[in-house]
Image (tube, rainbow, N blue to C red; front, side, top):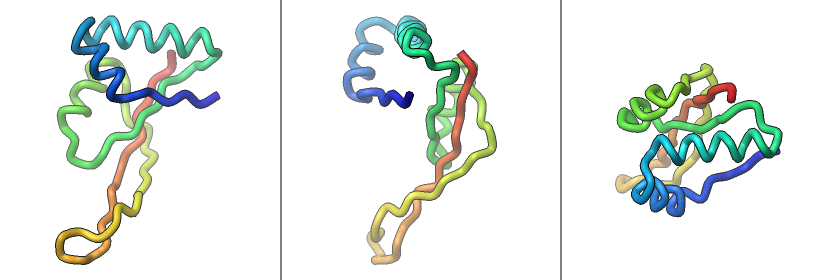
Length: 89
């Protein structure tokens, strides 16, 4: 089963309760739903997210995807490159 986070709601929860508690609750919820892994995607160059995920025990698994993101300011098509990160839970 795939579950998606409500990012704004999660950010508000983190601001109120702290990252460690939110991650623990997220993992507990995923396990209760039968999940055995946590997966997310990280954009090229997002060093803050990479530090956060590394600190939380996630790591890249080598998968990469490219998403068309429309024309840039110069009119050329732009592509968002992301790397998949995950952990067994």
